[in-house]
Length: 151
Image (cartoon, rainbow, N blue to C red; front, side, top):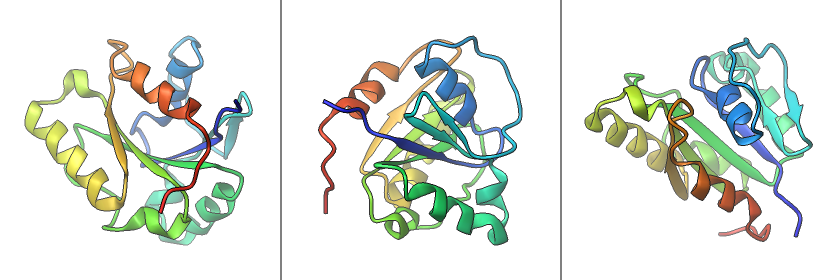
């Protein structure tokens, strides 16, 4: 069974690159993603500015054409979100949400992050911590499911 190709979308410092490093069993080290980056032919890491700057959002749509799944990444410690309600519907692809940095967030912050992702259109939501290594087993299993497009 082929693994899905996933595009990660979220604001700068949300943990997209760290999430990619953890899933691919790479050393976790910070670097600023400057351009769209394909990792192991499976994960499409995108710069946060593509979401943050309205005039760059078209680059996300173009980059998402090669993806089987949309992954919205929300930092649990962030007040608010960049994802408007129904955001995922513009991609017409299955969408999951990932809450990052759960190890440094309060329970209330994690719940808010989950709600932001749900309102944005995430069908499944995973709560992770790259520093503690939690929440990834279920997330990786979701990559390996048959590539079916849900309604």
